[in-house]
Image (cartoon, rainbow, N blue to C red):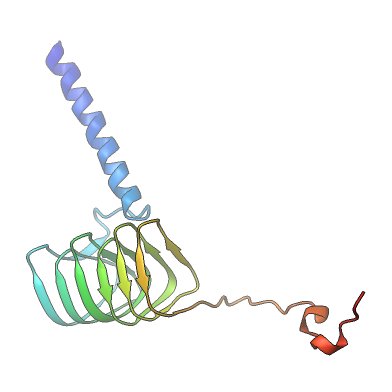
Length: 156
């Protein structure tokens, strides 16, 4: 009787832990969707080009190109030019980054370099040093009064 309950409790806890891990990665499930994985003890130099989701927990030096998702683990150290659809990072990235969809920096991430993305989110505790360029495809014009020269604005 006690064993059955403890097994059910362990199963429930595992499900909760899996949900928490998925939320830690920006709500992206990392199970079957990951097409490549660079482990903690791995050092890689070169160019990575892929489709799908890649998780890096080791050291990477070079370039990363994808239309998919790049997951950067907490112990990862990346020195690279990165071009991706979405980037979710808890690790250290140094280099120029372009994300077509979004970048999500989770504590304790460190990002040193220029960033170009339409959407950026950073948790408290993230260190960001660099430049950022953000633009939306649907940029709207400001009302004409705001665009008017300062001399044309009447004083009250």
